[in-house]
Length: 283
Image (cartoon, rainbow, N blue to C red; front, side):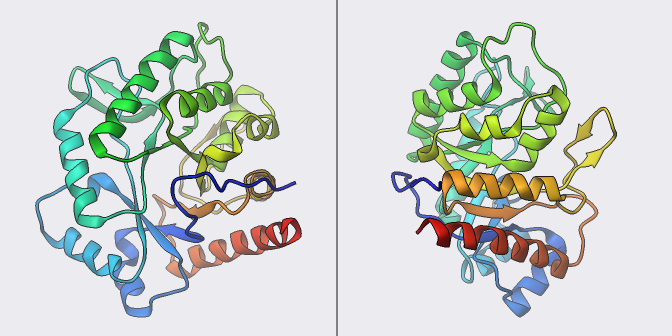
């Protein structure tokens, strides 16, 4: 049964796409049926220039949300104040509906590994990350969303499941969740857990957004590549997510092997066709 998520900070936006350079002109020229756009924060954290001019034009047509990959909220290194200042300034410029990043760490000692590294799911890590999230939210003046990452290794010291850890961070830090359904499927395969059990462990009133994407199946291991169409089992898991969480803002991600815009719009229509009858039946 679909549950209400009416206590969320931000109203749902509908069905969106990740904005990529390949599609700038076509989106501006044709204004396709997209409810909102997600922009990669780091691509626009610059003082002016062509990318920001495009973003201003997009903003006049579609609601925008900001999604980052460099917050490194789980790192043991101090928060990057320069990064946060530039992130806050971009938010002033763009007026996003919300800001998100990943529940992970991306580097230490001022070195960015450019990868989304998993955390040990321990009480110590809970205390550390929740305090950092609260500090970031105080600085930005708003609640943020944290996304579950795909993972390929586990820590022997973990005393909690990934979904227990994510849920507890959201409660302790009073933040929201960007639920990546593909990442749940990928990690479930890699670590042998039931993706439905993951969904059942996430609090309904914390899920603000859903990501959908493709991956590369190497047999024993699945790699989250964002370079392929969404497969049927991920669509099935998305249907289960909508039944649990309700009308959550949903978007399609593609970061490599970028297809024609029409292909992504077709996937977005698939998301609509899956979600709408579930929501109508629950209304």
